[in-house]
Amino acid sequence: MKATSEHELVQRCRQGDEVAFRELVDQYKGLVFALIARSISNRERAEELSQDVFLKIHKGLPYFRGESRLSTWIYRIVINVLSQERRGLATVSLDQTGDDNRPRHEPGSEDRSFGDLVMKDRLQKAIERLPVPYQVLVNGHYLKGMRYEELAEALNMPMGTVKTHLHRAKRRLRLLLETELR
Amino acid sequence: MASMTRCDDLEPLLEAIADGSHALAVEDAAHVASCGVCAARLERARAIDSLLQVREVPAPPASFTAAVMRQIGREQWRAERAIDLGFNLAIAAGVAVIVAGAAGLAWSLGFLNITIDLDALRQALDTEATGRMLSQVQTIAMSAVLLTMALVLWWWAEAASD
Image (cartoon, rainbow over all chains, first blue to last red; front, side, top):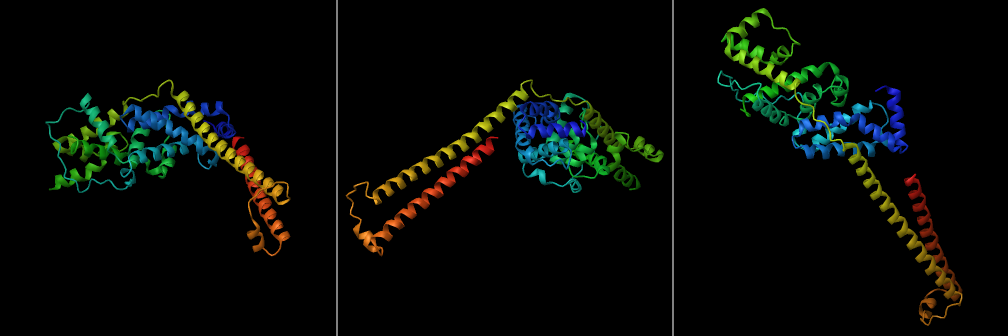
């Protein structure tokens, strides 16, 4: 979305233009819902939380100063909502991989179920156990329309480190699958 | 021992190798080809990467926007109701005080014949005239304060509804 049209949309929303806010919801509902529903497997709850995000946006728009992109601000709200939902786990730092002292399972040839439905299910469970910033990174990175820089800004991480963090998140997923979720 | 070190060195790089952002060096490729542990790990990393790429994208229901707008309408209605309630209470309090003040004034001027004996109270004050004045000043001041509060609340309610 171009900066001017984004600015106009925000201005119209601030003036109480209901049509403008509807436009905003239509524009972002796909990404917001996908991000949340990929993190929380209960679809009804994901819907409630997504609606909650837009209520927060509606309430917060008068205070949105436009210092960051609208999308970045919206993703921050998504991260906060997901963190509140999973209070406690959200505080884990991205630099803390937490796997260094874990007993390692050395994968052998007996587990050849990768790629099937069981694996998909296990992967979903593993993603749900990731700290929220990692979750958002993994879920957001593979979504069409989600840009690296917006994700980095929303997660307060330098652009250059996004890929490194993404690799750490995937490594964490692999270790989870190799150990706890076997 | 040397082989385990190579496994450990390679392990943190597997995700980058799996998604193609890190090229496998010739000697590392040879190690992976001969090491069952590293080969299995790399296979897992590649499987995870492919699964993440083909994961379904959950779509919101068609009624999503309408549901959000309904919720917002409900929230606004609740907020307006609270403002209206506060405003009505303030007006009621203001009217009550004005009525009480008018009654007090009428009574002090002798238009109301109330048989309550307030002589003792009046005597407690220096003179009859001062007592009258004081009672009127207090009542009028209270009325003025409450009316101002009511007007401020009304102005705030109007500003919030805009």
